[in-house]
Length: 367
Image (cartoon, rainbow, N blue to C red; front, side):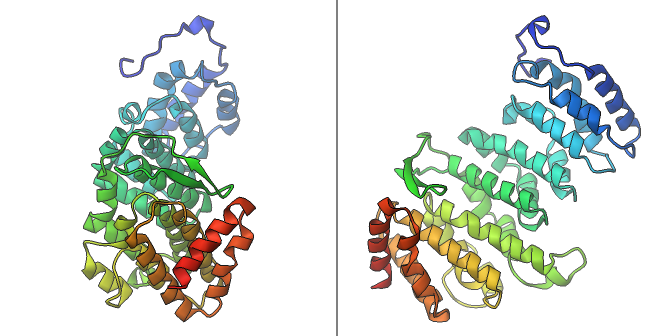
């Protein structure tokens, strides 16, 4: 297969038993997409796969799996699991020689979480280089389908995967890299690993494409789409809002301007029902959630805490202080407990960060 270089000698590899049986089984599934998968056979083959012996299996198995997935009528979890394992050595460019844009769109539209996750795994490959992210940004249908699955899928794991993948795509595509970012698992500043700037194509697709940007606003807003057949349930709406709240603080470290301004004030007027400042950050923080929903109020507090922790270590700017002060004042005026919770944040962070965070919060709330 000329698209993928396989230079190792097959005889030197650890043999993978029952591959012939699996190929025959795949042929049966291709003939009759209503047949169940032989999960034990899939597991038997997959458990033997290593970085060394996987490449020769790719041209044998992946085209067959791709064909089956386009028409399979049962839960494709075994097929998707094996496909993900086969994709590990491949680049985004190589994968797209197997998977068409239409196949990705179909996978994102599938009700099966395994299909959604497989498609997101493929898009995650594009987050490895700015060039691949730019190629993906040109696939508007794929990006739109990805955003829809990310925000509307009922499966928690799909939402978590989508939040991570979209964040990675935007970060690798960012023309501006901050000097340091926050390790959210440990609450400490760590250096940025990549010094290669992106070209901003993915940012423009998400924030400057009216259709995609409007899709985000629509899926995160309570509106007619909830009541329509096939629309989001109240639980799905809460999940969508939580996923957006989880993404924005991370993006704020890279391009605060992009998430605080908008080229579509009419869309914000439609979904915010006010003349308040535009930008996805203002929409999410001030207008999106139902404040009577206790869980969403807690999600909002978590969002603000993460936003403040990240912005504390980004370079100083008037835009940053003005934005944070405006957000804080508005929410504090609506929720009397908010100020107390935010001021207690330094007591709940690591000791090395506490004093600096306390001073930063004081600068915001004392203005």
